[in-house]
Image 1 (cartoon, rainbow, N blue to C red):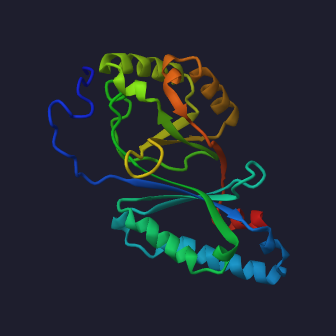
Image 2: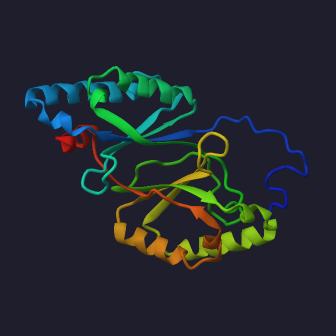
Image 3: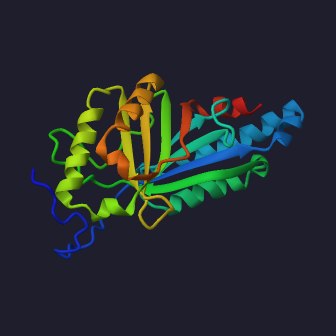
Length: 248
C-alpha cells in the first residue's frame, strides 16, 4: 500500500467519517484511608453494593450496546491510584451512566478519581500498509495478566514532517516492536475529546518483555517527537471482587 499523502484529509477535503466506533474510558480511583477504619462488616457491605453497581452496568444492558468492562488493581504498584475500570462502549453517554451508578453507592464517598482518560478507536494510518497489521477497528481488551497504560502527546514538529518522513519513522518503530510477540498494543485517539492526543495500553503476561520493548523503542527516531508519555500505570487484571478486597 502507498503512503497516505493526505492523512488529515485537509487537501482532498475528505468527508467526515461518521461510522460507529468504540470509545474507551480508563477510570482510575483512589481510596480514602478512612474506609479502612470502618468495621469489617460495614466495609464488606459497601464493597458488595459497589460490586453490584459496577457489574450491573454491563449485565443490565442489551448485548447490542456492546458494553465491555475490565477491572484492575494497582494496590502496591502505584501510590496515587488503587483500582482502574477499563470501559468500552459505542456511545460516550454510557460512561456517564456507568459512573452515575457508582456515584449512588456509599463506597464512592471514600473514592476519588485522580485520573480519567477518554479516547476513541480508529484505524491507524501507519500500520495499514504492513501486511496483517492494524486492519481491524475492534479491540480485544484485557487479554493479558497485566495492562500498561499511559497518555501520549506528540510534539508539534511531528505534524510538520512530510507524510513520507513520518511513515519511515513509524516503519522503524513497527520493525523494532516486531519480536515482542507477548505484548499487544491498543492505541486509541483523544484529539479534541481529552487533554492527550492518544491513550496507549499494552496487554501482556510478561512485564519484563514490556520493559525491554519500551527500552528498545527509546532508540528509534520517532521517540524524538514524544512530548509527553506520563503518567504510566501498571495494572494487574483481577475480578472486581478481588480488586475491592485489595482495598482492605
